[in-house]
Image 1 (cartoon, rainbow, N blue to C red):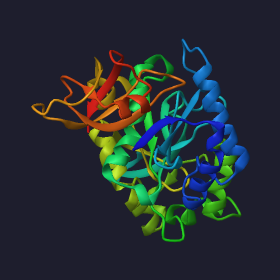
Image 2: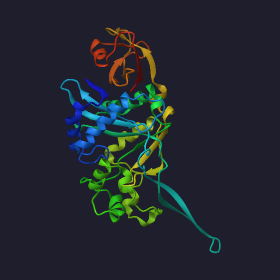
Image 3: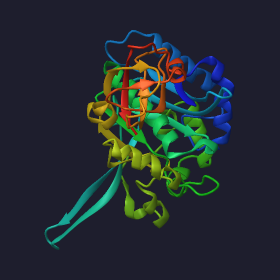
Length: 337
């Protein structure tokens, strides 16, 4: 059984393993013990904090294999971004160049450095060990955060974004970075990603060009990468789009990966989950069980997993109840996979 729960300091070694096997592809999961320790610390502090108005809280959750206690995945959600350090994106807008005398009107796409997403909540740090990468497990790891948001909406901004990693080759070289970013920094893409992760995006974005960058001046490879996720992120993009996220022409300043956005309250799992009481026992053979995500209503003791039950008359086994820290009659949140 795989179980979602908040990170604890005992997970540090497991997090380090995930950071290493991620190969430096995740800005928010650098192979740096101090940063990972702080990631756990922020989670613990944020969960203990009584929140009436969201700020810079950050919550990260571990996907634990209950058979051996191994951490096989991690995911996170920030209450809001850009509150303490700048949060930069490129907005892709058309610039109009016109000459009435020549009767020429050209619309040219250009990249505008902006902080338009400041104050938005953010899904982040989604990583699943390849040995456990299935559609069901990816749903659990990603959508558990939406059930947590549904239970504690006051802790999150009204807009939620998700940045998807952009196109890179087998050695994690980004054509967008090679064409643009490298001209402003004497470092490769992996190092830029690492420095961003252990400091902040503002640490390196301040050196980027602040004037519009005309897209036709970029290489063909860089232009093709604009707004495109890495191939292995395609399933994540599909999952988020099914939740109601959409691309509004904002891209990452380093690899040009797409930023997706949605109104927090309108996200499918947030809006459509069912709050209900649960019973513990044997499932009636006449019922038609379906696979669901189910979570308790805890904060520091938040738990979430996948099980099969009748959503209208939910009955769970004692094993599932123990994993979710539930007693008969407790309320849970349920949504179908």
